[in-house]
Length: 250
Image 1 (spheres, rainbow, N blue to C red):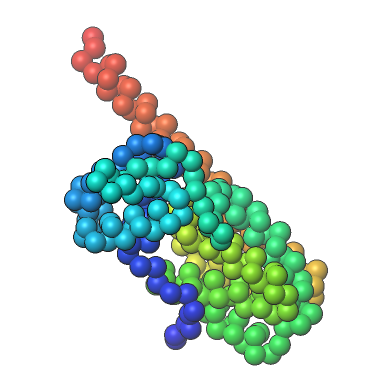
Image 2 (image 1 turned 90 degrees about the horizontal axis):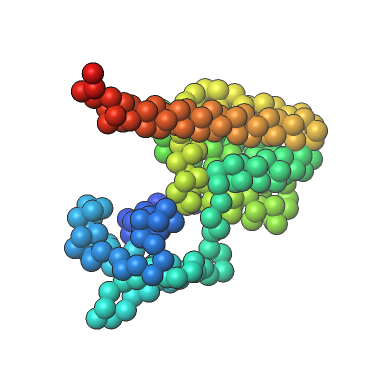
């Protein structure tokens, strides 16, 4: 079963640009510092020097770095941006915003959705249960986009598409979603089926509530994952301290 997609696969240099940007954000490459040379970065990311050069051009275009001929590549003193550039936000902020916006889109869609869109949503829910992560994620994206289009509100559609870009293109957000969305594909499909049932019944309040419940569960899963990661890091630090301070002690 194929999923029609209008989202182009990200090119390799875009992925490398995101990884360099993340290193800038976490302080590995602080403002004003000189980036390593093309050869070193190519070895670090296991790509060609041409890909590094393309990534640097992309980063310069949004003001993250400055390429100085004959001198090197430097991290900009302040974060740059261009119209349409994504903000630096947390996974929780993105998910909270999606809950607020998409709940109302679902309520509107319940009034206007047609039989063809209902059938489309049925097909997408089945695809969400796929063991192929790319197929499942794309089905999820298209499910929410179909509801946004069914709302009949172009502004809502634009907001929801932008929020999905944040979900996919902001590295920490993407990682947070990946950590929780693939745990139980069947449960995820069932949550979306609750939304579809409300839309089929043309029940605005129920559609709004079902969409909110979906994102509430997602935030709870993210919090659980964050707690597990924090505990793991704490256990690692304690273990390292034991080895340092108690190893060989009498």
